[in-house]
Amino acid sequence: MTTRRDILVGSLILGGAAVAQQTEKGGGTIASTRGDAFLGKHAPKPLPFDPKKLTGLSEKLIVSHHDNNYAGAVKNLNKVEEALAQITPDTPGFTVSGLEAAKLKFTNSMILHEMYFANLGGDGQGIGSATEKALAQAYGSRARWEELFRALGNSLAGGTGWAILDWDFHAHGARTYWAGDHTNALAFGAPLLVMDMYEHAFAMDYGASAKDYIDAFFKNINWPEVDRRVRAWGHGP
Image (cartoon, rainbow, N blue to C red):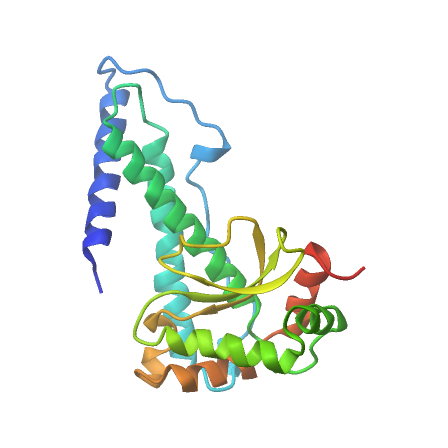
């Protein structure tokens, strides 16, 4: 579904492209430079698992989510970076701020989707010792954490956002956070487990039943990948 925000972002991207054309024609603006931040060369990563083999999540749903929502964010990020490369001292402030807002949105969407797909493809079993320890330290037990994580997911039914278990570097521990519109994320954290609660992640299979989707999500968690993240970013050798 196209929102007013999407329309605004699209117009800003087109506006940035117009600035780029002006620059290329030598319209009195400074020449753009192309460092790593402006390459616009991001490419979607392939699914790290066989979408036919998930439990309770259809191949059609997963492929659509990957090829349309995730790949679309990557494509839009590339366009935004190309437009940002053409900003000059004469570029209107609303264009600059709009493009920067779009860059944050699409960058986070790309990253969160990649981490979401990477923490799927498992059998929901075999949680690692580092993860178990981190959850017990933060919530008293893994069971209590899961109860609260599921509650957050269910609270987003019919809305938008992500349920994320982060390593919170400020708190020095694992914490669950909500992230909305790909932008309202923890400032100083690293995602450990990411659950997409936008309707495109489940409506094709479950309609409005977020609870059934969350049940299926937990059956497909790749806990070894989550444990790898915990060990890399916070808790354990």
